[in-house]
Length: 324
Ligand code: SF4
Image: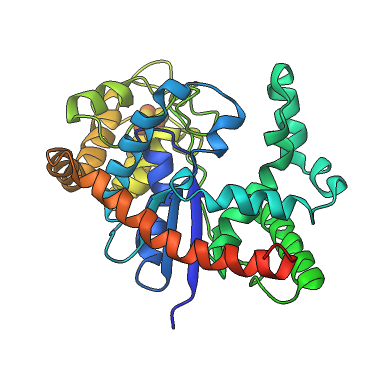
């Protein structure tokens, strides 16, 4: 029996290079080794209440990218969190076994309070409980996480363990599958690539749009003139060549250091590498987008399959808690 993997991602719309290299690629690989449950966590997106009018569009664009990149609805369960409402029921039940002190000391809660002091809602405090419900509702045994997310998963394990101690063995304690998520910097060369910071390159852009975006990338600030030798080690364009032109990367470094290549040519080369890499994905995306009902069918089928597991878990939980 393959183990079950769960992973959730917020509906952020069209995905960018950072999402692709950091998560989607890994999701695709895991499909062969595990039974994967991949969820677009739309309820989590409500903690900030920004752009809720865009939510449906963002879900659609995101799933389009996932499918085009190779997430296979025949192999994995792909669905939207709120389409399986048992998760909110389990969230409430798990909140009864989660000490408030555990939640108040979560570093991301403190960060969020600083980021949105005008909207410190209950959802922000309860976020780790909902995240635990996401995972244990499907009795997932493995969760792919980066080093920085290990403490969050540890909290989920503690909540599951506490439930098991109080009511008997119910949930597997989800194990972290440590994954190296490369830190992809944005076009500003300083901060992590992010849609909100407008420093991203969407994977579904046209070749021309991609080139236009790449041309805005910040490079080595010391390289003022074409004849100045460059420092590829501090240039984000160069680090992106590592993913999209891996065979040429050494050569580019030599040419940059000796000023044999200018930044415009170097960026053109990067845009070409990105476009070549994503051409099959983009074609696939167009083909899927041309079948208007396909996405609804995939998500409905995913929710139906997820619901079967969710209903069984909720029944067991309620029995153990004395509600049935
Ligand atoms: S030539 Fe390329 S690697 Fe060198 S500074 Fe310019 S963009 Fe960066």
